[in-house]
Amino acid sequence: MTTGSRGMTVVGWFAASRLAIAVLGVIGVATFATFVDQGTLVLDNPAALNPVNVWHKWDSIWYQRIAEYGYGYELDTPQGQATAGFFPLYPLTIRLIMTLVPALSFFWVATIFSNLVALAALLLLARSLIPRDDMVGRVMTIMMTSAGSFYLSIPYTESLFLLLVVATIVATRRRRYELAGLLAGLSATTRAHGLALVAVPAIACWLDATLAARARWTRVLMTLALFAVPVVIYLAYLENVQSSWYAFVTRQQLWDNPSPYPFQALIGLIEFPRRISGWVHGAFWLLYLGLLVRYWRRLPLGESLFCAGVFVISTQQEAFHGVYRYMVPLVPLTLALADDRADVRHAIIAINLVFGVLMILAFVTHNRLTV
Image (cartoon, rainbow, N blue to C red; front, top):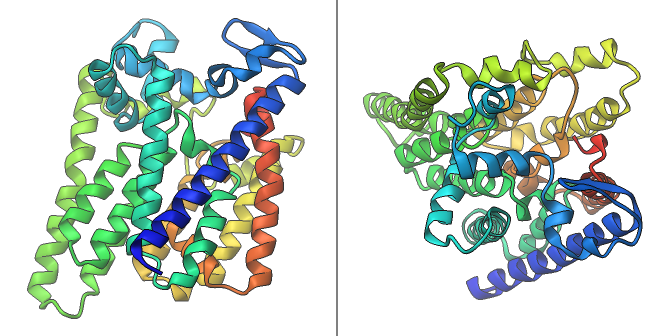
């Protein structure tokens, strides 16, 4: 299979899956009562044909606020302070693009950006990380049928985070550890799970047998330093606009999570046993944790630790929330699953398809099951 053939496979799967997701979104809004900014959309409302009414919900509203006003807007109100709970790279990138194309609204700028970035990530994945031609279609099937793949095409951080994850792994496997460290640092300013990504280049560099011991030390330290640069800039920015470099943690209380700590969600299953969403998302978390255990020894150590770190960070809320979307960028697990037995692949794909349809319908109808 040529590079062009791989690219056509990626584009075909991406386009087909986006069309299916768009249709499901319209069906959801047109069939069930849902909420938008101006009120409630009732059954068969023609507003379902407007993508803004279908997809501009939940975190997207907050990213619009940040893109249009920044983090220093209305700081004397809880709403203004709550923006610190969102990481800056995605909304501030959209803010920059909006200055270049002021005729377009936030939703359309962010949607076009998310789709282009997601497609770029998938093309890079197919070109640089999939070892055999026969795996390309399987990897795309797994990625595009994953329950949270619809987040790649709406104003959310998943697309940009996926691109940074893929680029970090590619740079690491090419032994460009310092560049990988910088990319991992950028991912950490996109979402909290990016903090775990530094394990990929740092561990690979430390275990690189082609480097002398002193060279390994030097390059590991440089990798960590470059990882820290975007993170430090972000913390300094928070200190400047929100008067606290630690605001992204302290302001979690405004999101009903005053004391975030690892594995809190597991305790939440006991404390709040009647929260159906916690059990549903918790089961999805356990499913993918099982996959990590299954593939642990097949993966490079740094990539395994990255996946494990994402699992741990995903438990720092009082209940499991949105876990299915956090699994989408776990590229090492996707690659390993694509090389597994057909019955295992098909079972995971089937579970994701069922769960994904439910989550799309919940998302577009503003049902809290989605988060």
